Image 1 (cartoon, rainbow, N blue to C red):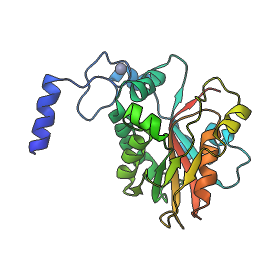
Image 2: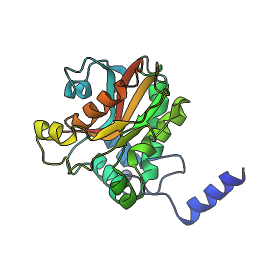
Image 3: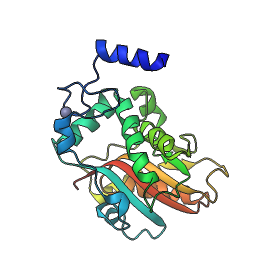
Image 4: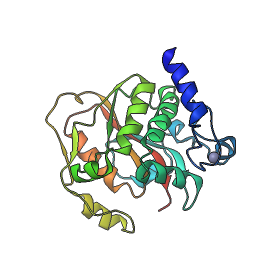
Amino acid sequence: MVLQLLDDFLQLVFPRLCASCQKYAVSAKAILCPYCEIEITITKYHLQIENDCTMRLEGRTSLHSGTSMYRFYPQGRVQQMIHRIKYQRQWDIARRLGLRYGSLLHSSPIYHQVDFVVPVPLHLHKLRKRGYNQSSAFAQGLAKAMGVDWSDQLLRRVRNTATQTHKTRLERLENVAGAFALKKSTLLEGRNVLLVDDVLTTGATLEACIEEVQKANPRSVSFATIALAEK
Ligand SMILES: [Zn+2]
């Protein structure tokens, strides 16, 4: 009650703006203004075993399923939102997107069995510089809405890779080879693991992470990202 009052008060003094256009104030529970809400539609990939996301990782038989909440177009509204999340310290947008998407995944026949969420990690140097991992924030929201555990302590990025932007698929695969390491743990054994990242482009990063997570003998590995980028 007190927290709700405090939230209402803060909303009055510092109105929360739309996570994409930042032009219009939105209610405490909303993420986007009505204009962006019409433009940015959530995909139906969480209801499709085969979709544009899984096609990016085709050939990986160990993958159970994969989905992206939105599609990302250059200079589009989703890109604006991702930019704020990654570079303007607005990680809380990612957490709130996770809460929203997690409730959809929880009622999806493909993802309802997920029982552990693991975010794609940042290298410690980048984490210190940025102060947060946007994929962890998304994972936190997803796990809460799905009522399952999550941890950003199991998978580590042991090599600080160069940026993946402007690289071909092969270059990206070479770039992330050996970049991740899984901590010895039985936490993922027999679990249906959901790997979480911000943007899916070629799938090279997720591929490398799936390979590491498989070492823990999970029952299945799926992935979810905030956005699917054009290649
Ligand atoms: Zn807007």
